[in-house]
Every structure is written in structure tokens, then in C-alpha cells.
Image 1 (cartoon, rainbow, N blue to C red):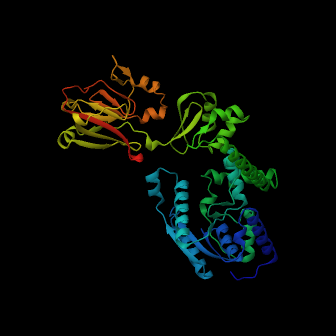
Image 2 (cartoon, rainbow, N blue to C red):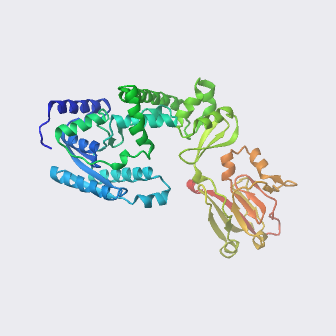
Length: 469
């Protein structure tokens, strides 16, 4: 690695320096830097390792053995081990069971390797105190990514290609072509290994690399380089777009995290496109168009790509915290026997920060108040064979409200209270068997009312634990 560089190599290093300065990596060009180098042993990573030394870094080589190519995988590991020992470069290695990862997650081979690789890179960088982890992607990789995403049908986010820097990961070689890297290795006498699967066309990227790009170059000489230029132009446009989107976000984003889509569609010419970008693509564009057609709706859910849902409710698009919504599991049973024997019981509810405190109080301490968080019943309720439970609402639920004749649908009671769809889902329902006894925070029923013969009274109190009520 102390070999004197030729003039062409000096020019190549200067181009890399310029690329790094232009893409937010200028601080890495001065002083002593400890950087991880993703080292597979292939031409790109071997060039990157030597260029890291030329840049004045202290490289730490990082090699992953996925064991997918049998002896060839072990050959690569042996090669990088010997190359790093000969150059006096620190090497850290990891072996992964990719098939086990795929079995557990259902991921494809490519995705499983990616997740294992980047997870290990990040962990190792923290443990060793590495400022960055450098990856060997080059200009042809960027062109392949641009074409791959374009053929899938993407916007500017996908068409911008590979980012030169993202978090701790940097790509110093994106300004070089594959041919320039191979020429550099040849001039410097640097060896490397070749992955035999790169010649196979089983993967879409290999088809682009081995079939489509050569055909483009044959018909349009220099076409690959111009496609890379297009991707970089789009990347600049995308950065400008993101900055403008953030300005709009400040206008339409509310403190609770919801978006005022009605206001957005009332004021913006390209409202659907803006909403798509405000959501960072978390809803596909078809879902965004449906929102534009149903802005005034109440209770419309849209499933997010990243998991979870958005609720469209009265002109607001609300991200739903699924953990706060009760799942349709078995009802939570309130221990009536414990209340009779101990005089009280505390029942945490399995959603939100709610709990119900039940206690028996003597009549002399009974002072009813107009507070929907409290309900009082004759103690004979505890003697009934039907279980006392708490559960989410069900379609068709009815109750007979206290002081009224006849029953009402819970859905009508919810509508009268102007509950949103989320509030309806989060509403606890206290039941005696199949009969609704209480809607905490809303209405009490006429079941087992307190009368003059009741010496003790069953009091139920809904608490918000977060408020320490």
C-alpha cells in the first residue's frame, strides 16, 4: 500500500476528493479518520481499501461471509484475511446463517443478506468507534439502480439513484465507472476475487448489468454515463423538492401529528402530489387519490406501507397508534368474588392508560355526582351468575340508559357524543353477561339501580392512569 501512485492515479484520487466535498463529506478529507471499509474481496471493495489509505484514513476492513457460494465464499474470506494481514490493516469478520434468517422472517435471499450485513456494520461501527462505514458502490451501480427503480415505476425518490451519503454510510467511488476501477487496480497491481454469481442472469440487477446496459452502450455510446448524470440531476431536484415539502409540512401538520388534508386540498394546486410527499410515500398514490375524493368522510381507514393505518376523519388524516386500540380478544373478567371478599378490586384495561377501580361503599359514604367516569349499582349485581366483564364495542350492541325507557344502539350513543371512529374503538364496555351495564365516561344503564334497600353500594370508577386520577 506504500506503492508510489502514477499520475493517472493521482487524478483519480483528486476526483474522489472533489466528489466527497460536493456531497457533504468534506470533513473526512482532513486529519486522521478511522473508517470501516466493507470488504468483500471483489474489485470495488479492494480499490476502496487502497484508496482509503491514499486519503489518509486508518481503515478497518469489515468482511461478511454468508456461506451461500460454498468453497467460493470461504475462498473470499481467506483472500481478504491474507490481503489485510499483508497490508497491516485491521480486519473484523462475521459469518451468517442466511437460510435461518429467511426461515424466521420470510425475506428473500437478497433482503436477508442486506439486513444482516447492515445490522452488523452498524453494531461494529458503534463498538469500534468508527466515524463512517465506506461502501464500494460506483457509477455503474448507480445507473443500474436508476434503471431498476425506473422499470418498477418510481418517482423522484427512486429515480435519484444511490445516495453518496446516508447516516454513517458513505460511497466515495460513485464518481468512478467500473472500468476506471479495474484500470486503477491493474495500474497498482492490486489483486481481487470475482463472484461467479455476477455472471448469472437469475437476478434482475444482473440482467440489467449483463444484458441491458451493454445493449444501451452498443446503440448509444456513453449512454450509461448519461443515465448516471440523469440520476444525479434528479437527486438534486429531489433535494430541492424535499426542502419545499418541509415548508408545506409546517403549514398543514398539527401538533397531534395529524394532517389537515381539507385545508391542503383547498389551497394547493397539486394537492395529491404534495400529500403523497408529506406522507413520505407511506401511502401509495392510489390511496392518496381516494383520500382526495372522500375528504369529508368520517371513519375511513387507509393502510400504511410501513404498517399500521391512517384514519381520515372530518378533514384530518390521523396516524393511528395501533397499540392504543383494543384487539378483538376475549373479554376481561372482573373478579366479583374478590370485590365481595376484599371490598375492592383494581382492573387495568389492556389498551390506553385506563383502569377501572371497583369497591363496595356503605350507604353513609354514598354521594352520587354527575360524573360519567363513575357508576353505582345495587350490590345484588355481584350475586348474579353472569360474568362481569370489560370489552370493546361490538356491532349491534344495545343498552338501556339510566332514566330512559327502551334500549338504544351503542352506535347511536356514540354518534350523539360525537365520538370519532378511534374513540369508538377505544371505548370500554362493561357488561353483565351479554347486557351492557355501563359505558365508562359516557352513560350508565338502568341495570341494578341503587335503591333505599341497598346497605352497601357497588361503585365503579374509570381512571386515567397517566393522569393519576
